[in-house]
Length: 576
Image 1 (cartoon, rainbow, N blue to C red):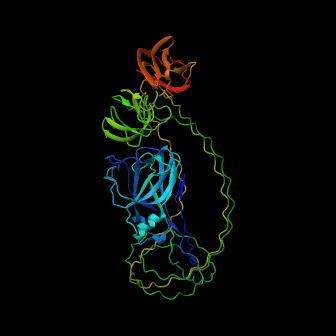
Image 2: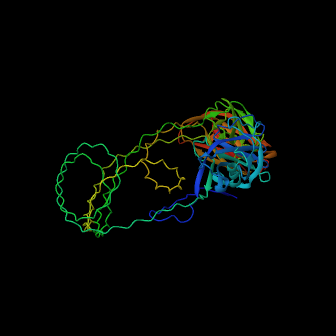
Image 3: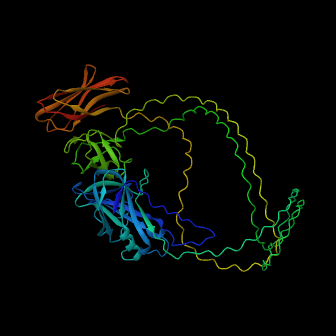
């Protein structure tokens, strides 16, 4: 059995009644096993991904490259002696950070030892029978829960060694999904294993309550005298046997308190008299009016500079098929991470499959709308960024001055205190018996059920605003825009001063044999650059006239057609 969606483990709250026997068995409790190791492999690849921030699952028909995820949990967090019969249910939960192609997964037993630091696509542990099959993985940003109760029971009973569990794409439905690992610092949604124990065991009983003594008459209270100085504490003598409790006498007037002498032995405690009735509580005073709220304080200093485009390609490469890899030469891979989504100018969106060295990265085509068609040439010098290149940041406005704080309202009057009921008389203190030898420490009892989660504390104050980030790379990008036989014109405002000359265009549908689309970038009546997409091609580029633009200028994109190629959409960019 499996479920998707936001998942939370069971919260078991135990209620203990003091002074009455516990009837029935103890309630169940939820335990969380610690994730000891996680990694993923790509079939035929010698790369190790034990420290990666993402775990991958993929297989046909969704992807032509098979990817598997391996997980191992430490069960030492369970109470000593826990066996399979103590387990009510065990649920494995993973978080789908990205789903390139929805589908289903299977959970399989791992039947040989492995280490996340050495597992690769050419050196994988052996797999056994399925634990769960056809578990749906429909969309990104969803938790996926998998019932692994039978597997956990076998681990605890010694039927099978705890070598973990493998997650693979279902052979019929396929899947291409990226999960969070324990090394991911952004979401902290690492795989979890929740184990619910039934808590069977003999119930404890409480002895009978002794009889309550009668209440003596209340004596008048005398005035309290000044407190004397505290004397030195004498050594504790041995505790003698407890003497019999004498009759309770009436309480006389309280005299002035004298100086405290050395502490003598403590006598046995007499029977406690019944408590007198509590007098009624006086009415609460009215609450004073709340003072006016002061004006908002000034905005804090601006944070550190942001990140624009991260790097650029240093050689041409051919666009791979959707779900396939391509090795790309770039200026630097220092900021990249396996499993991260990147955007390459004129190419589209990719997932980082592997990082070969400081200037070479292996990218997987996600097939998102607007990406270049397979076999298209992506030119050297194309900007590479984390999901998209940032535009220029606008200036930060001036902070307003802090206004004065309004006055605090007056406090309402306190209601009158009700009369205090009479107190029972205190019996005389008996002599203290000798202290018996300390008995051996009893065995530690079973861990009680987890208590309820406390109330969430108030939100802390907002920190100061960071400094305005640096302006991103100087280029203008627009689209996808509709293109047609009749032609179209679009205007794009220029956000900052820049000098541009190179035109890049990609469209989602090729014009076809004997047909073409022509694109022109203009500043007013002046043409900056022109390029044409014809026949089976889906992209074009051209170096035009270097033209200066100021903030507020308008860049015009003009499109014409030849040979009636039909409608399509295109993304255009003008760069230095």
